[in-house]
Image (cartoon, rainbow, N blue to C red; front, top):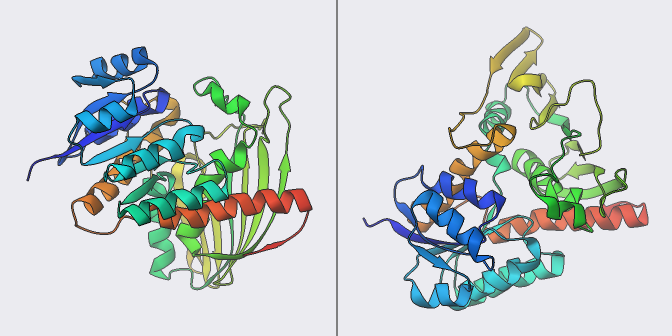
Length: 339
């Protein structure tokens, strides 16, 4: 089988790791890159030995025989490039957040469906190795039926240094990392029936909120507290770790500091180190995130190859987008949102 021919639109910070992750997989080849800033496109192409470089996405789509497009641009252009690819009949992958708002995200999903084009959202956090092991432990039934959970990602990490556009984003934490952690809640516990949210704007030098808490009541009865922050000055800054505590009728599952997975029942506690693999090309600050890109890409690739349906389709991710914008509505109204 010939490798799938993949084109990249958007050659900024994250694209360097996205391309590196694709190169870990057999069955796909990045053959062309595109960015309105031609120097960015050339730099990415030179780094990875890619010969085709474009400044205009339409030219890319018209001149290359592509099997899939990976959109790695800022959210303001996601709809434009997703729908442009769909018009050319090319399956498309989009970075999160999918759209600038819920209505735009719905329109993107519907447009791709109308065009008969596969649409995926690159929601990689659920593919972190340690999170998959939390899910495996939960599904094993070792703690029985879960009834409450806490997902925590709180740090003072200066994410704006590598991605300065985030400081100018009107909606920040809930769209940026909230997209990830609300998706994690769905991955672990299924769909939510209601939510309540509070947000905080702590850093005076950014436009959007930099901390938020969302309380989710899941349809399976689990009460899930999701807290996220880039404004938390703590004794130990745990970036990029996610900490999870799940309590069930027979025990608890705790993903704690330094990637320790602790399972406690009435007979005692077991502890396992669940550190993800580290790739040589990964940024040390983001290594756990970058490792998850490989597995997320593999899942999409298997869908494109007809092996299985991907987890993070546009249609599935729309449910996460609904939680993000429901959280903003809850915070604005100071009220519970029923889904």
